[in-house]
Image (cartoon, rainbow, N blue to C red; front, top):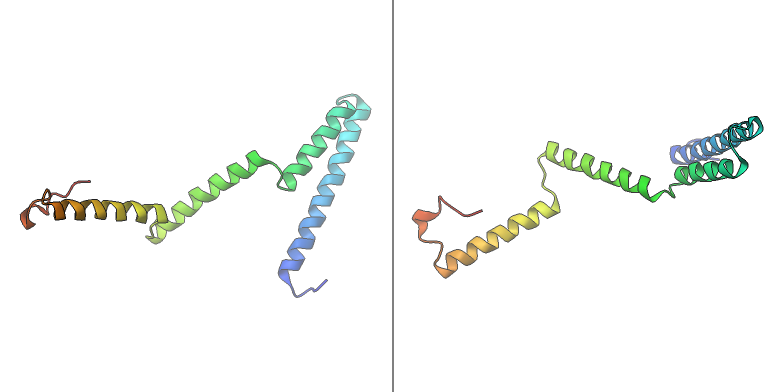
Length: 118
């Protein structure tokens, strides 16, 4: 392993942490099975569900993370004063509608520019 590569170090540490969690989880569930607090089928299901979540194989967890990331991104863009693509598209649509109204004559003359429709 290249000790100067922080990405590689992070990956190795992440894998080690996941392995450690899996081992401890198996140990705890085995202790629960031995004490009668959990039956063996439930123990294996529990271990598989937790490990699937750690590997990112939980669709609901992924959806929750995606929603949270979207909210954080919206907040960041708002803090920076930047617009999202959908907001720009909406504004372009409004501009197109206003231009069509002006060309068709229903927008009135320059004196009516102060009251543009939404």
